[in-house]
Image 1 (spheres, rainbow, N blue to C red):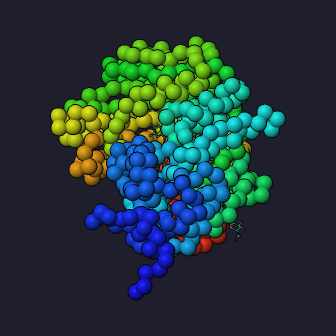
Image 2: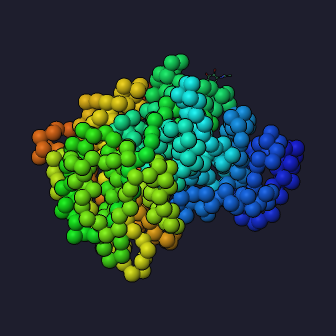
Image 3: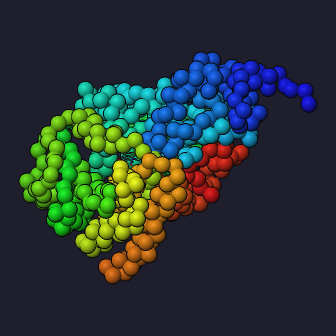
Length: 506
Ligand SMILES: Cc1cc2nc3c(=O)[nH]c(=O)nc-3n(C[C@H](O)[C@H](O)[C@H](O)COP(=O)(O)OP(=O)(O)OC[C@H]3O[C@@H](n4cnc5c(N)ncnc54)[C@H](O)[C@@H]3O)c2cc1C
Ligand SMILES: *[C@@H]1O[C@H](CO)[C@@H](O)[C@H](O)[C@H]1NC(C)=O
């Protein structure tokens, strides 16, 4: 066979000289075509190699930092992304991935071995239009930068609670925020998505022109298109109160009772929010970490939130501060984590069962006990309890609805995130299975707890931002069939549904 001109160019451009290089010919040709369309914006192991190497390290989980794409493209405008998608359409066998912050720890969701990696590094930043009271947010960068850029205008957008988290993936997956009991999920506040669709056209998706697509964009992940700009209705904000506090296990009973009370009654004061993290470390040691937030300089002195603040901690930092300072500080403890990471999620109603908080933590401690031994001194697991009061569904519905299908008739619920971290690749299979053992156990327990509480069966969709790739997140959505049909209609050749990783309607 006579090699085509493009394959010669591909070989020349990539000068693939290592014996084990495995990107196939079509992928190398696609990389060359993208390089031709976007000179200076394509990195390979040989061309702009240092920057290529730097981009491969921008993942939260260290497990993803050894993934080597055939090429990495850094678009700096929607038109650049459109050019890449048009090339991908010419090469139907080539796989690709889109990465914004790289915090999704699931393999293949925002990384791709030997494929085309699109990164949003050069599509970052946020601005505010006071006349329209709208914020424009780009997907690259982190929440710290977005909140800092908007703060001088007295506005924030509903977004991450730890400032170091990425923006683009968070917003397509849904996103729970400290502001959610006032404003709904982060995605509920998006009114426009500048999106590169599967056919390479740039569409301004919005609820007026296309309400179904707008609803689908709020929590379906990456399957409808690549978002290059979000238009968001902001939340007006001044000084806030908050920070994190560590507690030893002598406070367990008080904490569990206060959290139960907050989850069931906290929405009476929607300015208050908490994340309650129960950590398990070496030898089964237990540590409690609570992030508190109040949207105002002075938190209340009575009620469920005040009761949480009164529990004595061993190291406590909540105070009155700017919102940007709060988010930045909240990310500090997590920022030192440099490990392989897993997320897994369970969605649980507040079942009038205060002992549930302890039972779930103790079950995780039992499951992880053989793993958290002296051979893995820095490894840790946690179960994070994130209250999702019914009021959030009510707000979601009033703002047009999201893919998760939250509504005002939902009960108070809790998103449980089971997080694990460890150092060695040889521990991957075992570590992933530990979180799964906990969700398998919960799948059996929750129906029993519901029956005991006389609550019957409940709609319990999984929360995408915190989920493991093998969890059927979109299958758990009540309108999955509608969104599956919509996905097929805007992506008939399956560019996003079959050629990139992530959660899919199947
Ligand atoms: C320390 C930490 C704190 C967190 N805190 C919160 C929290 O408070 N609330 C919460 O809800 N979640 C939280 N998360 C979870 C977080 O929302 C997800 O990990 C999310 O995926 C992060 O977004 P990202 O841009 O970093 O994702 P990435 O890993 O870059 O992408 C995730 C997915 O989205 C897709 N994607 C990314 N950008 C785009 C785009 N522009 N267009 C289309 N698809 C895109 C990717 O292809 C991938 O499938 C936290 C995670 C971490 C690690
Ligand atoms: C591309 O797809 C979008 C979404 O389905 C559609 O609105 C648009 O008309 C299509 N453009 C072309 C040129 O086919």
